[in-house]
Structure formats: structure tokens, C-alpha cells
Amino acid sequence: NIVYDIKGLEDIKAKVKETLKAKDVYVVPGDADLNPYVLKEIGILASKVILSLIEDVKIIAVTGGQTVKEVVDNFPVCSFKNILVVPARGGIGQEVEKQANTLAANLAKKINGCYKLLHLPDTMDEEVYNLLIKKEEIQEILNDINSADMLVFGIGNAIEMARRRKLSQDMIEKLKEVGAIGEIFGYYFDKAGRIVYSTTTIGIKLEKIKNIKYMIGVAGGSHKAEAILSLGEIKNNTIFVIDEGIAKKIMSLE
Ligand code: G3H
Image 1 (cartoon, rainbow, N blue to C red):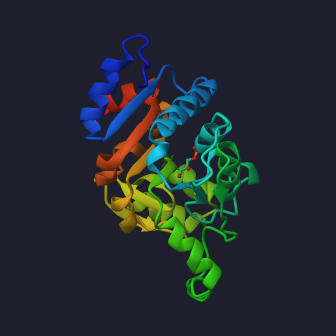
Image 2 (cartoon, rainbow, N blue to C red):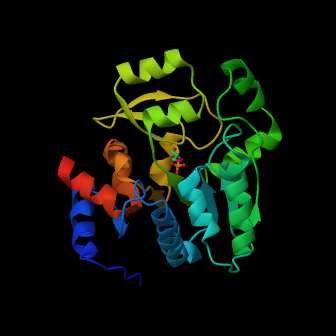
Image 3 (cartoon, helix red, strand yellow):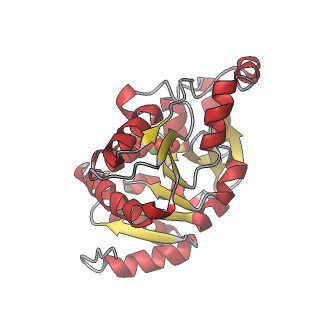
């Protein structure tokens, strides 16, 4: 059982859970926007949440990003030999330490499990994409990715993520026009929870995530509150591990 009640965070947690209509919410003290160490705390707590569910899991998919990296870096060494870890999508583009492939391999090592990698960029031309997905080895890993029973994912601000993913200035302007607020694995959401854009991407498909047993969303820093609120129905199926900064901002916005 995970107990984390400092400064009445249990109360905040219950309120945020209700506001988001989330499957569950865990809150660590502090605000990662003010103190980056808070991200490590999120990583530690998310690891505990994952460990409490891991016996029930065969395939774990992970996205890239600093917050998921904190989860992997702070995961205890253990032994779950039969678990396969895969990247939720491509992602060559950001720093290698934060790429989904690297994080999948590192998590697999921590749990003494196995991993498969996807050596493909996040975004590519439609034509190239259509050719690649016909390849047997790509099909095989895509099947594994889309059969994941746990997905550990980071949540980002739409415009911040578009810049990080090196979308063109034109595209960034378009995202602003359509009101993109939040981003998870290449899908951009507006305030009403509608998907307003998605990158042509190889990896986990949004229509599959309804079937994922355990969705673990990790985010730190109050500037990500709107992004979390924008995630539409995905919130209902997600266990969030966030910080006090986000939690309080979510409550102030609703
Ligand atoms: O899609 C969102 C990103 O994974 C968030 O990345 O944890 O580095 O802010 P971050």
C-alpha cells in the first residue's frame, strides 16, 4: 500500500482525482517548476505505483522525456524476467538519454526483463511511413507496442513539445490557432479534450489505449496543469503521479 501524506496531500489528491475523473492520483510535495528535485520525487513515487501493479503486467510501453527518465532512473533493481519493455513510439530526435528507446532498455535492465527497440524517428513523410510499416520486424514490435498492458507516459505543453519535436514555425502557428494545449506521445489536445493534431508517427495508437490496463501519466511543474486538464477521456483511465504545484493549479482552474 502506498502512503504519501505530508501537509494534507491526501486531501488535495482526493479533490484532484474527482476534478480529473481520473482512475487515481498521487501527489508529491513541491512544484518542479520551482525545484527540479521534485521530478525525482515523482519518479520515486511512480516507481512504487508501477511496482504495486507489475505482477499483473506482461508488456510495459514507455514514452520519452525527462519525467519518465526520472521514473526509470529511480526504479529499484528487481527481477521480473518475463516482462517485455518497449518504447511507446519512435523518438530519435530528442537527446539520447531521454529517448523512449533508451528508457525502455534502461527499465528492462532495472527489472531484469527483456526489451525491444524501435529505431525510427517520431515524425516522417507519409510515403516513408507506409513503406516502413510493411516491414516484418517493424510489424512485430508494433504488435508488441499495441499489446502493452501498461503505458508509462509523460505529459507536455503542446507548444513546448512542438518546439522540442522541431515542428516548423508554420505548424506551431497552426497549433496555436487550433488551440492546442496538451501533448502526449505525438497527439495534441485542445481545451475541450479534442485531438487537434497528431504527428505521423510510428508507435502506440490512440484508439488502442482504451484497452491498456494501466496508464501511468507522470508530470511535474504547475505549468503543466492545463495540459493535464486537456487530456479528455484519457484522464478517466489514467493513474496520475504529479506534484503539489500541478494539483493546486488544477484546483484553482476548475
Ligand atoms: O509528451 C510529453 C513529454 O513526454 C513530456 O516530457 O517529461 O521531458 O517534460 P518531459
